[in-house]
Amino acid sequence: MTFPIAARFAHPGNGYDGDQQLAAEHLKPGKVYLLSSLQVGRSVSYLSLHDFPGIGFNSVMFEAADWPDFGEADR
Image 1 (cartoon, one colour):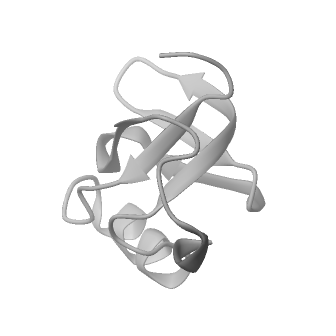
Image 2: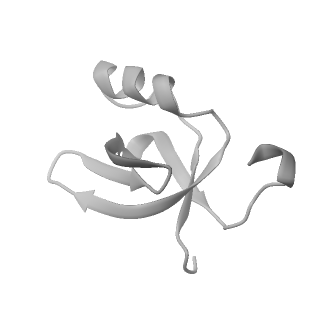
């Protein structure tokens, strides 16, 4: 993994119900997002994404990805 750090929204069914609802409102399954920060907790960790400042998404919904990892049509 190299910088910038990116993550693919690959597991929309993971996480708590509230996490799933929040992600469904903002994220597209399979899309790669640029991370702006990562908050690691004891029982849950959250990713902040460049496209959605101020919103934390449960890290269990993502998998590592390279940036860029998609074509112009997916942007």
